Length: 309
Image (cartoon, rainbow, N blue to C red; front, side, top):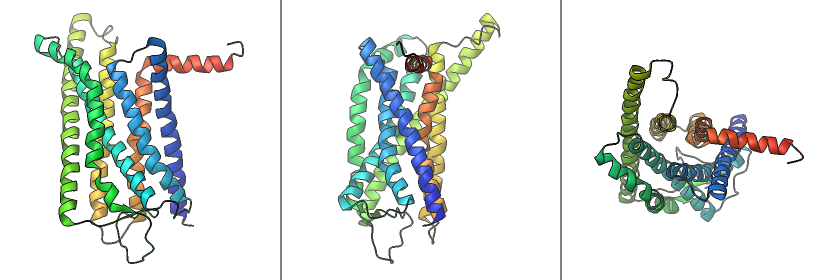
């Protein structure tokens, strides 16, 4: 067994297990909120949807990669490969769309309380659930190509695909189909990544202006009191920054891999690891910035340690 494959297989397993556990904690927390308050705020609904998308992406690619790194190869047939890669791509697309929705929602939330923005704020809360449903439909349609061009592992040594997943293979489709799929995916990514970048830039501007006003009115000593809206905006900016940086790195690396004459397993494995990074790390940013989750975690720990509870 190749030591490099085994090392990355263990890394995939650790990344997947920790990422799924933390995203599962977020879903448990939001379920707890619904059971106690019988409602879920718009931002919490978006974050819960993001946790679902992250979990789908981690499970559908992390588990097969971990098994492949441990030496297993023929554990998926044609149907299994199509399902795994289809739902991985759908989960990845949902993460892009949901992060964009979160950025747009928070940008409108912290916008000035003018009459123009007031109407948008009222309507936005009613659009969250329909947007999430629309994202599912959009990504399931855009990623349907994965059902056609993925198949089980090929034993032919003549197969020289730069994206060799060991346990599944990619079948070449017609040039027209490839162009249509590439344009659809690229257009989706360009629109949503561009929109989340623009709204994050707008939030940085609003927060900077707010910080200057607070310093001017109250002095530096009181400017450290952070309102919940400001704290939430900083969390979203951190999430979007992480996503854009990882997406840019992933796009550059994928372009290098696809244009290489000889396959580089180390570069390919690193590319797949970084593809999981946002789904595994983003929940930590959400937990760290939300005081409610810290209190929830403390109560759970205390109740588990106290036998009388």
